Image: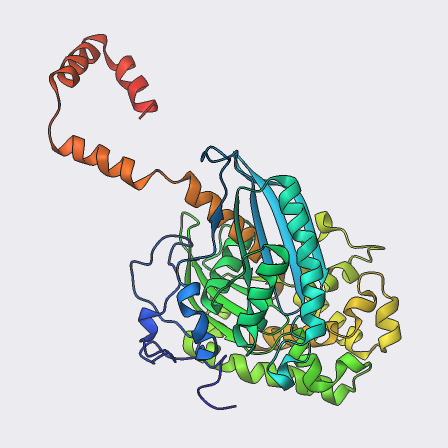
Amino acid sequence: MSANTKGDTRASKAKTSDGRSSNESQLDSNLGKSASSKRRNTSGQKSSNSKHRRRNNGFKGIQTRKDQFGNSRKAIYSAIDLGTNNCRLLIAKPTANGFRVIDAFSRIVRLGEGLESSGMLSEAAMDRTIDALKICAEKLARRGVTTMHHVATEACRVAKNSDEFIKRVKQETGINIDVISAADEARLAVMGCQSLISRGNRHALVFDIGGGSTELIWVSISRNNKTEIKGWTSVPWGVVNLSEKYGTEAGDISAEDYRSMVNVVYDHILAFEEAYKIRDIVKRSKVQFLGTSGTVTTLASLHMNLARYDRSKVDGAWMQARDIRRLSNEVAAMTYAERSAQPCIGEERADLVVAGCAIIEAVLGMWPVNSLRVADRGIREGILRNLMQRDQAPNPQWRQNRNNANRSGDSSKDRSYRKKKHRKGSASSQSETKHD
């Protein structure tokens, strides 16, 4: 693969494929706030999604619905993550400490099936996906969703006919899909998993194994537990295209081919290690590893000997790296029939889980940590957090008007009020502060 191929890692002074310097192509440093400082971007993102660049910047796909009188309805939020393999929906209401999920939907649609060889989304894959999105549309209407952001990732970034597919989705389901960049995908993944990043660590490495790519995000953690993305890369291998390359979607795989799968992913993440020297940091300080993907949660379920998948037991669980690597090799050595018989794998994942195991082995082989935390959350949760934080932030115009009033002096009525407040003493002053 050439040096310009997606997934290559760049040093801080390298140019991205759209002509900007790396420092001009950064993620938001405070996970939702505008970036105020320059840092290195090591995505090496190939400009295969240039036709979506305008749509990607600033999350243009966010929608807010109002009632017939033009008033905003009681806030109900939705997020759709349409990936290369899965279509996932969450609908939630905000709470004091976050949000409460009131509806959810997930279906394996394999939108990127055959994309590696053809460069196109197939008719069958698009039909499957639209059928799933029709169910999502029914749920959105039934729940009265007011604010939504529905995104697509790698398959729609690279497919030659993705524009036609997005138009068809709108026509047949009424859903607007925003094709986001790999940078935004990485940021949203971290936002979605942020509550699982433990206090006391100075760094974290989040990896999100998708169907058509794997995102690696290097995060620093301040003493007050604020997270900042220092770098990221999008490896051009996920469970679907890696399976298609080595034929695991057809059934069994040899030990030799499995090692080749591990090595091809390892070679792609080597440049990311060289840019950030993560291995050295792992040796001398606390680094938390956080894995979010169907493969990671599947291995956790197998480790727990669950008769059926239970999110409440899996999400946030810790696993020893040696157990993950042992299970990965055991799953890879199984026949297709044996994998299908496992209750937490089943026929739907039996052909793709081996590729996921290979990706995990490559990550753990590059960075020898003792343990990692399992996350059954990611982009959807990140979208919901992003939307709710945006809506809960003080109105910028109100803040500007208040600042202008403070700078321009005060009226006689204001001065009279402050004299009365001063005579009442400190208790009155404290009460006023609480209501400010």
